[in-house]
Image 1 (cartoon, rainbow, N blue to C red):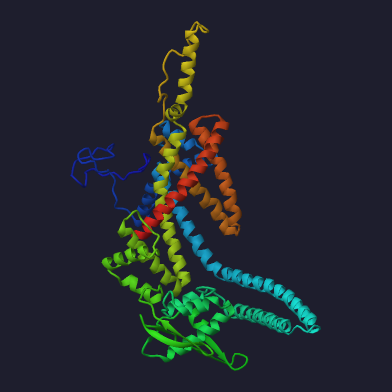
Image 2 (cartoon, rainbow, N blue to C red):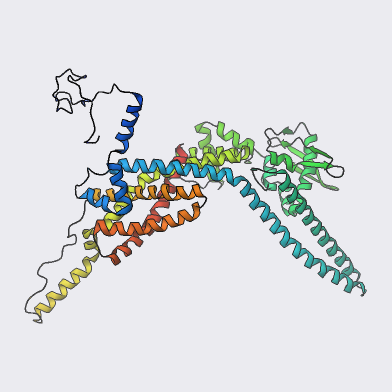
Length: 537
């Protein structure tokens, strides 16, 4: 608590009943503070805030030193002038609380505002693809018409057939592009919010139908153009629906899957119907008409196709069953996540990945919010690990003993050269009398670097809260973020110069080395912390 705190003193200690003198701030017997807490709630709240931030003069002194005198707060703290500032850990907690509060608000706002923006970007991409495809098809159309005209004037029957076929294919492509344009307009008109996925892949459909991974149907569908796949899959699904013995109706079908299997009857979209989607039972065999007179046999998987039902089974598996599944997936080459043989982490990672895959299918927006807030938690934990590591980097760069270790071969060579010159009498007096020590020179204590690390991270958080937060309020957060990062880097160089008292050229050089090492450490620790926390959550 502050030394200037106004205490409401009592005459007898409420804890041990010792008689207290007027000047006693604490009980001489039990150590309890001589301060009566029987006050209104508002007064108590003020005291809690005061105890957390030292609002009397310490907060003002701290902010004044931070923003007007880079490095001063660390320099004063290390030189013993600590009473005027908020303690480093308390300052970090205050700054990080405000920072992560702002970060959470910015992410939630971005998700809410980004729904339409995201979809607009998708529409632009579709339109751009359509435009490129249309230009290419028009070129092909002109080329095909010219080829057809040339061949008609000749007696080449085969060439005439091929040219007519090419012309037919080009016109079909142009028709598909026109249909795509109509679909784009329909999407723009009907959709005004977030959708789960813009595209659905044929493999995803076949997975949900529980078709075996190496089945003939997969290979045939794969060879078809994308604009023909949907029509063929609808025809196959209509046949699967009729077999009630070897198939089972899919539950909880996503809106996109339903839209994929929605057909229009009649003109001008007057009538629509949706197939009641079915999938094959495990190891079931079913003959279907693939195209005209072509009959193929399709087979249900043995339960290993990673469809929705498979993912739901994973979430219900016991630890033993999940361990067996992970071992099987590794042997099959489908599991690349190896947490150094720690099966508990691999198990947790698989469960959580499966959970988020299902969550994205059910409600993409809610899943994104959940995973971003998880990321904020990982980031806050990672910073606690990163600050001591930054202190180690500072100790390495600003330790005379570490410099001594790396320069030892050159100093030893200089000593030997001086000794040889002395022996052959080129020098009457030896310049270097003592064999150089591999570790020599004074170095700072580790805690000094740690204090600087805590202060500089606190400053970064506060600058982001004040300047980027202001940018968010006025609608220029990107520009504010860029300016803040540039300003912080300059601030960092000045703070290094003030605290470590080295020449500006050397300070700038070391600051760039620190920046590179910091980026490497940041992403390494973030990935390790995130993976472990994700697996254990």
